[in-house]
Image 1 (cartoon, rainbow, N blue to C red):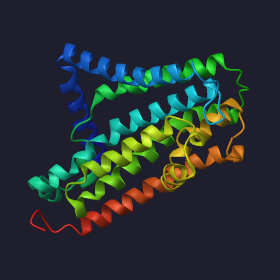
Image 2 (image 1 turned 180 degrees about the horizontal axis):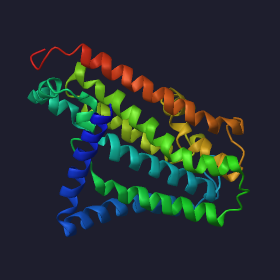
Image 3 (image 1 turned 60 degrees about the horizontal axis):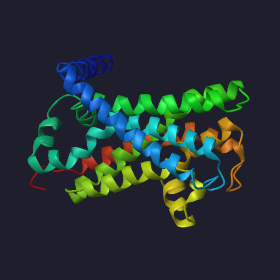
Image 4 (image 1 turned 60 degrees about the vertical axis):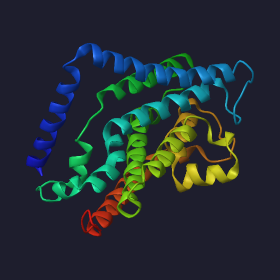
Length: 267
């Protein structure tokens, strides 16, 4: 186990060094990612020039939901975004090569290309979160401090698990990139706004069947001390931790089942 961790660490370090070798190119990629995240923020600013609340949540709450969602998705994209290319591995036969190595197939794919530029999205979203929490009248307690640190990490774990599970469909559908993109980026869009904004059927899918509401919505409400317009108790935010653990375990099971049923490129 320790040896595997050292190998993965060296692979990731090599990937990161290769991306920062050309500094101007890396800086432009980083800037592009920041601009993308800033554009999403601009949409919220424009919306609040016309309305006073979204889904019963004021501007401060919506900004924090957006910031937590952006941080979690950026971290998940950094860690697990590479798996969206699984279909290419299967169709080209490269996945067979992964099977003969004495390392986890999932670990090999996740470390195949670490897109460091996505750190720009994370830093920008964290800056927005810091601004909101600094300017809002937050009654800081030990619980809120812990949640402020834990929520983005657990949110990233939930989104990474969603990425792995949806991408695993490629073992049966082969070309599953469209499905993976719809699930992952659809979830990202959902979690960037208050869950109460959406109709009931979308909440049922993206808030609870796919537990997106526990990435940003419930943690943001608890941090700001705002009531849930949907009537949920404040303690729901603490389900983020067990849901992250359960999602990670489920993703590991789904991946093992998918790989176990794989018989080769010709199958």
